[in-house]
Length: 364
Image (cartoon, helix red, strand yellow):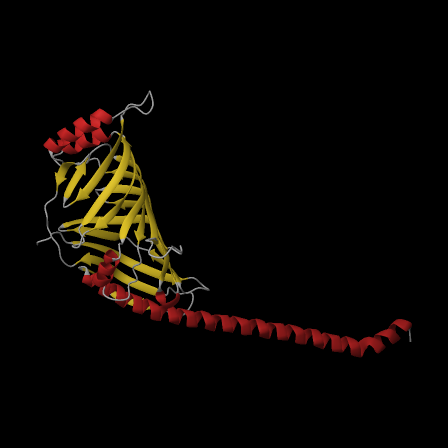
């Protein structure tokens, strides 16, 4: 018998044992992998069930708060799915509308889907997967968008943390096309000295590249390059009770809305401003803006020619504005003007001169 044969005979039992250990190792690894997958699936399902429970609670609270201010939502079908990867919530024919007022309006979305983050059920992504419609009294406008989604995050007990909304390439039939719309809001985490009023919710909205229908009766040109506004909700507003009561408490404690930045680029108008919005006991808004702009005189003239502004008020305002207007650069075509713009008691004023009085509907 050769030496090789003798060596193979001696090592055969050890080879068999090693092979079995190897096979057992893969079996154990396969079992552990399957066990982890099952645990992960169960964890995701439990998280989705918790998210569904919180969604139902928040939805009921939202409807109650909306009803208190004359608004409501409705839908034809509302489905919940606890199994991944199906949408957490599917809403058919979602409707958002007002219950009372001089004019009735309604936003209808054919289908809305909500999907949570895989490992954080408090992060929700809402997608509008079909076209919508906006109606104002008897007028209806079809809405289409290349992309429309809302991302929201909630913390413990369903408390709001942040929200982002993105809508791209929107077409509002017979009205306008909007290239981009972005809305972002977040709960502020700033720590302030005692009794200081600080922002509790910070938000901004940006609209870019709007093309208006050429048949509409609008001022200036048909192209709006950019509208940007930053808003801060100043003062704590914790919605736990009735919304009107919460708002009344917020107002009593000195709450208001800060406008740190406002930008309007609507050729030939270029306007920047900042200010705030405060409210009286009846919650009538009082807007105060300090602005700097080019082509403000052109805007006032266009609005006057369309019978939107009071001619006498515009005439007096133009005299005051003309006296302080200047060219920022030598080659500027339009004059630069720094002026306050206010709105209170249904009156719009420039340089403290009323240029428009709106009809008071509060008694109706």
